[in-house]
Structure formats: structure tokens, C-alpha cells
Image (tube, rainbow, N blue to C red):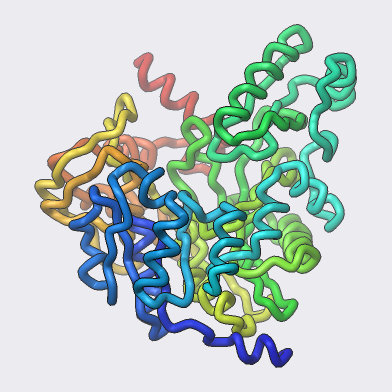
Amino acid sequence: MSETLEQSAGRFDTVLIANRGEIAVRIQRACRELGLKTVAICSEADRQAPYGKTADSFLCIGPSTAAKSYLNQDAILLAARLAGAGAIHPGYGFLSENAAFADAVEKAGLVFIGPTASSIAIMGDKISAKRAMMAAGVPCVPGPDTALPDDPATIERIALEIGYPVIIKAAGGGGGRGMRVVPKADVLHEAIALTREEARKAFGSRSLYMEKFLEHPRHIEIQVICDDHGNAVWLGHRDCSMQRRHQKVVEEAPAPGIAPDIIQPVGLACVQACLQIGYRGVGTFEFLYEDGAFYFIEMNTRLQVEHPVTEMTSGVDIVQAQIRAAQGHVLDLIQGDVTCEGHSFECRINAEDPGTFLPSAGVVTHLALPEGPGIRVDTHIHAGYKVSPYYDSLIAKLIVHAPTRAEAMARMREALAGTEIEGISTNISFLRALFEDGPFAQGETDIHYLEQWLKLRRAA
């Protein structure tokens, strides 16, 4: 270890959690277990958040709207200085993948618990990310690693070389926004124009790229952890194919039906890519998987909502590992130490109407959560908690683990049956129905399956 890194190990003892909800609770728990103090922040709408009572400091940083609170970089940095925090953990969402914020944190003399600003910038732009992955030998979706030009004739030629159907994506996109499928040539230019404008409004850039549209892929993820000393490991894989409008609903680990000899070279390539760009902390490589082949689509340079299923199968506390990496510690495991056992599912419980999926705000009047072996609930709500209309509708994550996939599915059915939330609408009844579905139980689903399943239910 170099002298600089030796001096930096353990370089902070107080962490400001720049987030809210269940992930704020999760990070706070990891910090306490590591002997670190925590600073919780809130907006006006979250003044009664339960994690504020268990933090060492609790500061309100602005009004209820996220733009004036959880996205207010100056307010967050000021709160960190006032509370004496030495590091900021961004959680997921909000500022977690904002390279400018990561840079501002470091320039303020604080530690950003995540990768460097340069790594975020490289992987945050889908074109530069694809270029970096191709250089590292990570398999990518067919299509050029350059932005689409403005010349219509050149765009037409690129589409023909890839072969229809193609998908147009915003270079700075994410969250399912800024993408459009083009089935044939006569709608190509209209799709380009619409997506450019959507990308400009959502991400501040008109830059687009084009790839082959895979018709029946699964969504597979590979979790990585890296330190500042040239060490990196991957912790198995997840299947996140159960999606509605590009938003994940259920995740599981490992991805069913993928042989170790197929996934292992991909995992090792992800590790190599991290080493090449000097990546630090945790991250997730996302792939489409079809006909036995993997195709890289993007990397999330942050903690994932679905990290618990990997924690349950690998036995690694991913949040603690992320914090320790930011402290400058050497990764305390090598690839040969990583063993994934059993099967895990995660259901995202949202405050939303189970039929229309419209958000549901209000007061939780009754709450009963399941308990028992192999059951975990990550949440911040309690009876009497007021669900705000200002933020994402996720209010809890229900996670189960069992020796086999079939046993894990049975455990999730029982856990869902024992989950009661009253006073607001939730998607629990929808999740219960999904776990009774035959094709899902058999692992025979792709990323389009859930949308088709919902259409059939509405038509019945």
C-alpha cells in the first residue's frame, strides 16, 4: 500500500447520508456497524422520518421538492460542513451518478462514497461507456461506439448495417427514458427527431446512439466491488427481467438457467474493465442476454436498489464494502473467496394503485411485516408514517432467501401473504398474483413478459 493510501485508510468517522427513505436506513445501519457516526438530512416533507431519530445529527436542508432539497448540492455540502461530516454517501437516485457533485464533494475536502468523478463521467455517457467496454473485451450490443451524426443519409446507412429493428437511445439517458424502438426504415427519422428532443429536455444533450434491438432478451446484471489498490471482484449475477415501462419490479439472484461457464468470462471481463478505468467502490454492469449471448447496455456507478439479493446469496455486505473502499481499505476478499449459495428474490413494494400504478400518498394506518428465517424487509415506514407525494413511490423492499429457486418462490408467496399495509394503496396484490404465474415460476420470462402479462389481465 502506498503512503498516501495508508494515510487515507479510515480517513473519516462521520458520514452524511444524502438521501432519504429505505436506502437512508440501510446506509445508516452499515455505518453504525462500522463504528461510524451518521448525519441524516431531510426536506420539509421528511421532517418526521424515523431515521432522523437514530442519526447522530439530523438537518433539514430545504423545501419538499427534490430540486430544492435532495438535489441541492450547495445545501448538502453546507450541511456536511456544519455537522462535521468527512464523507457523503449519495445512496441511489438523486445525485448518486452526478459527476459534477462527486467532484464538488472532493474539492470541498470530503470523501464521495462512490467512484471518482471521471469514472462516473465515462460510464454515465453511454457512448464512452460502450467504447470502454469494447476495449476491455466486454460483449456489447451490435452498433457503433459513436454518436449518431446529423446527416440523414448516414443515419440510414448505419441502421441498415445494424439491421432492423433498431433502438435509438440518449447518450446520457437512464431510467427507461430517452429510448425508442424503430421497427422499419420509414419511421426512422421521425423517431430520431422525437428522441433527440426528449433527450434534450431530460438530460440536457441531444446526443443519441443506435443499437440492434433484441426482441426477446433477459436483463442480467453483474455486481462488482473495487478498491483503490488494483483489486476487484464480481459477486455473481442477478436477473431483473420483470419490468414495467423499463422499471424493475422483481429481481432475483442468481439468474436462472445460466451455466457458470457462460457467465464467468463475462464477470471477469467486467472486473478487467473496472481495473482499466481505475474504478473504485461498487457498481453494476447491465446486460441483455439472448440465445446464450451477453450484450452490455450500461453500467450503474452506484449502489443498486436490488443489491440485497446479491448480499443474501454472496454473504457480502455490499454497503459496508462500498464504505470501506471509500476509506481507502484494501478489499478483504479475492475472487476465489466469492461463493454464491441458494436463491434470493426481491419485491419492490410501492405506494401505488395495483391496477393503474398511479402513486398513492397518505398516512399508513396499519403495518404488519413478515418475519422468519430467510426473510428481510428494508423499509423506513411505520404505522402513522405519512407517504409523501413528492418522491419515488418505493416504500419497502421485501427480500427472501432459500436453498433453491422453488423454495425461495414459496417463501416469497408466504412473505407477501403476511405483509399488510393499510391507509394507502400498494402493489402488494399485484405482486402476489405475479408469484402465482406459471411461466415466471419456471423462469421462462424476458424483459417484455410483464407488460404482456398485464395486458392479458386487463383484457380478462
